[in-house]
Length: 140
Image (cartoon, rainbow, N blue to C red; front, side, top):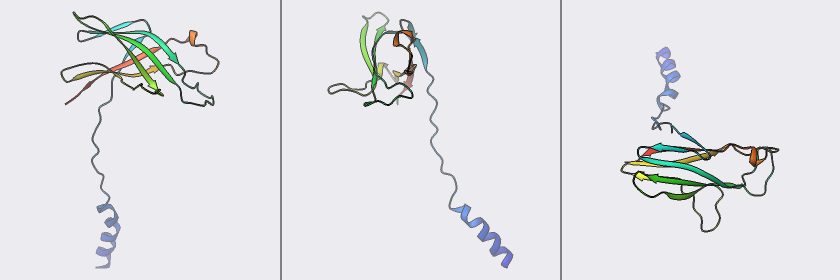
């Protein structure tokens, strides 16, 4: 009898602590668009035109504000006129909003993910080759 109680007491803590199922989030697979280049997505051409501002705090530096990077992107749907949009990553100013949605059609949304590389102390912005990362997100 004592052996049965001992085994029961040994496994009792594990009964209430079984793992909960966590929803699985599929990874976002991004496409790289180098500065000045165009990539086509299902009849939509995205052009990474220009880095308007890069005031992000360089790695290993102490900064007063977190900074941001703003980029000009051109979106052209097949048969339509191109639309230019400013994408902001980081701190926004009054009246601005972080809108990373570049294009949507049906249940697919094309979004900007990030701009690389992150600034490094001692490297001039003229020496940086910027890349915009975009991905398609399904909704619904």
